[in-house]
Image (cartoon, rainbow, N blue to C red):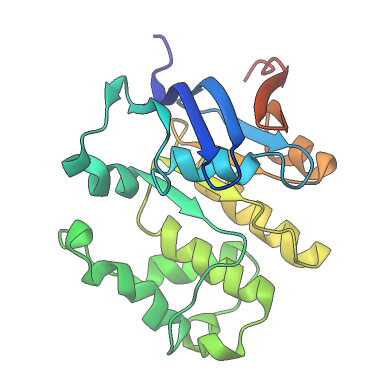
Length: 230
């Protein structure tokens, strides 16, 4: 049975109108079910621009994004974002405890059909090396690594199909970075159809977290190597 296409870009382009520069040259890209892709490249090369465009956080100037082969109507963007989760390098945390932060998405209209499960959230935190009391910690007391773990748990508990990870460990110590990698790996291994794109400045990390490797240079996305057999 052929692997299904999840996200694809069709001639997607991004420009900085104020500076008159091209941030992302026309890009054709497809992410299939089960793929783990990594994008490396120098700072300012367009990696984050591309990921935010995939997440529909920033509109493309030309071209379009599809989900499972269909263009995404404006009214369907909330449903798309439920399936495709974007994780920023420095996630915003709300006041209150970690659990308060994890409960927040369930107050949104897009998630009114599901309920918070503390046991599942605790299991996800444990998979990242955090103890049973992690959910009770105050968000203001979290280290950078702990805040990133909390942000990932907040997303993973909602069971997205795709993760878009924008250098989630760039500012973290090696132990915290490995915890984040382990958490994403556990999420991925739980469902063979799940896919992710991990933007990283670290080639060694890219080799650990992905089988498909791409590079970004001056707004041009290139395939660095073919995906090895899964």
